[in-house]
Length: 384
Image (cartoon, rainbow, N blue to C red; front, side, top):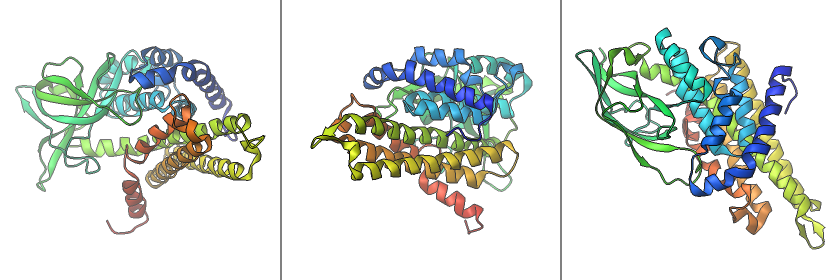
C-alpha cells in the first residue's frame, strides 16, 4: 500500500522493491537450501544504506526514521524473510540499543560501522532456560578490577556467528536490587574477546539463509566502560527495544503475507485445471481475496503503531496488536498459498514452500502470540 506515504518513503519503498525482485529473488533460494549466509546481498544492503536508515548522519546513518526501516523490511520479506530478519536484527537489536542508550564514545566507535553494514550487531537476551520469561536471566557479570567478568550462555541469537559479526550486547545479572530481585544490566562484548565463543549453529525449520547461533561466555572480560546505559537498567532498556522491534517484525510479517498473495496471483494465472486457469475458479479467487484482506489489515496495524511511535505517543498496545495481527496473517497466508500451489507448494523450487517454513517463527520470535495477548490485556487495564 502506497497511500499516505511521503515522496521520500515511496522512493525508498520502490528502490527496495526493485532490489528485492532483481537482486535477491533470483539467488536466495540456493542460499536457503544450503543454509548459507548471503554475504554479498548483505554487503549490497549496506551500500544502499539500509542498515543506517533510522540513524542520524552524524553517526553514519541515513537520517531517516523507524518507519523507513519498516518499509524496507516489508519489501524484502515479500521475497525472502532470511534477508529481512538479518536487516531487522542488525538494526533494531544490534545498533538501536547503542543509539538509544550508548555513550557518545560508544556511538562513535560502533554506529558508523554498523550503519554501513561493515559489521553486524547482535542482541544476547534469550537463554536456554528462559524465553518468554526474559527476566529469568542466569548469565552473570561481576565487576572485578575495572572489568566485567561474564559467565553464561545465550540461545537463538540472530547475526551472532557470522564472519562480519562485530559485537553482541549481552544482558546479565550484575547484582541484587534492594527488593531482592536480580539487577540486570546490558554490556557490550566485541567479537573476538577472549572467553567469548560462538557455540552451535542451529538446524532450523526456516530462516535458513540467516545466522542463528548459541553464545558462550566463560570468564569473558570486557572493560567496565562497556556497560550500556545505566547499571541495573538493562532489562527496562530492552523491554523498550522489544516494543519497537515488534513493529519491525510486524512489517516483516506483512511482507511475507503480501508475498504469498503475489506468488498466488502469479500461479493462479498460469496453472490450468479442467481447461481453465485456476484463477477462474471462485474457490481460488475467494482464498486469494482473504489473503489480500489479511495483508492489508496487517499493514494498517503496523503503520498505525509506527506513526504513534514516531509521534512520541504511547504505542505498546498498538505494537502488540500489529505483531499479533501480522504474524497470524503471515501464517494463514502461507498455509493458503501452499494449498493453492498444491503439490508444487511442497516443493522447494517455489517460494511459497520457503514462506511456509519461515512463517511459524513470526508467532514466536520477539514475543509469542500469547505474550502479545497478555500485553494487550494488561494495557486495557485487565489484571496481570
